[in-house]
Length: 401
Image (cartoon, rainbow, N blue to C red; front, side):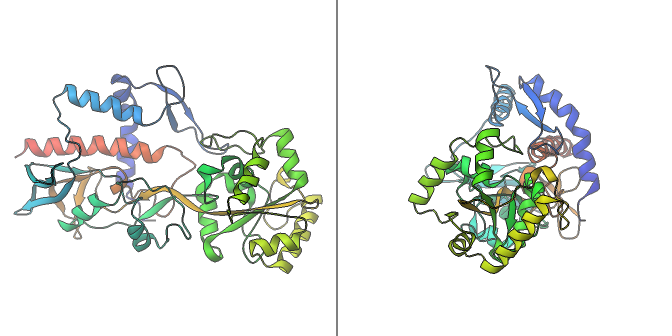
């Protein structure tokens, strides 16, 4: 465990007043919600002007308007290219304006908060080992390329462990929400060897599921169900709901599945026999037949392998048979710049780099090796709270100069 307990403590201690701080700027919260049944209600959902479910953009809007009231100027289309350092202290930065001219800005303190490297396939591969588009299908937001990390490292910032904010899904989830929702119900999950490796009821915890799938051959797994299970979902709805996915029933499953297969998608498979299903998906045929036989027997009594809850045990007996390929995905990267509990950037010798601060995803190393999905919203929470801490620390530092 390499999390900084003082940093975690600072985050927690700041959280309550941050909610008040945001509300004072006009941000309204609809509720504190859960991502899934067994998670904690820590996901603070933003309320729109008409009472609907909003997004974090409303927080950014409120903070921007407040900053402008205080006289803060924003320079868009002016990317920073280099942090400047003299006599061991940060003294400003170089940027490039919309005409391509270099602009030098003097500053007594600089805060790096550029959102990590979730849009940079090369950095993802170098620092996490995943190859985007092959064994990782995470969000790639344009412009989130790790520039802030690189600039901080150039002036001596120490690196921290870097990881992905992991979850699992089908590869083309945004195109096939209904198919994804059905294939993430807790049915039989097998790897390419045709064997179970995970208690499927825990698949609602995306981080746990993503980590488990990442440990399998080719970093993939297959959720399998039969015609009876499909009809059950069509009639009764889902056994598990993931509240951040905009699907609550299986009504469009068949049409989406047919469309995906017609479009040449090789992540979904339908067959009249288990042998045919295994061959289409590339799963070991004999092992799959053995696993299905064992699983069906467990459905009649109990799951002695993983103690899966009986209410999720649906046998696989009646054609047609369906399989969906699940893969690691992620919301973005976490970590990269080492900070202390004051959000001051540290060098390799754990010494503070005067005038340099970091916040948000760039400096979020509090999760060690796994994102705490059971406490949803905590990446956004860390971003806002560490940003406040960085700003306050920078202001205190500037007053000493």
